[in-house]
Length: 140
Image 1 (cartoon, rainbow, N blue to C red):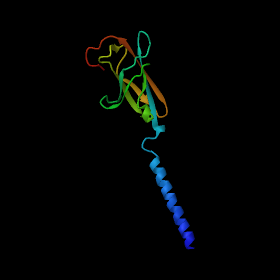
Image 2: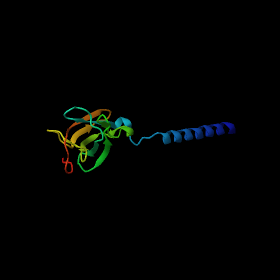
Image 3: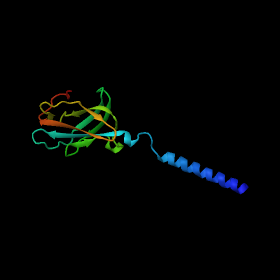
Image 4: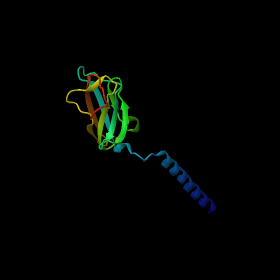
């Protein structure tokens, strides 16, 4: 009878250890299925070629909280928080900083473009630039 009790205790102890290890290895803080993806494409309005090296910032809808930032790749693309699996579902504003880049916003283009991240989906924002010197801080 004692031997059976020891086996039950040993089995229960093993289950506790396995359960604790499983819980420690599982990150439940931000389930990836609740994240959306926001991609940007920055292009030259004259050539439609991607413009690399442009700092692009993702703000919360209030325009005061910087949520994420990226530098466009050589083909003018980027995805906010790609390494984190995306961004939480919400409405954001995309802003490009053109200071010292030799570009300005193309005609009829606006900064602070609104975009909504939806869980499990990808939203894309395209901004067109025109070659020309930006002389002051970027406008909105």
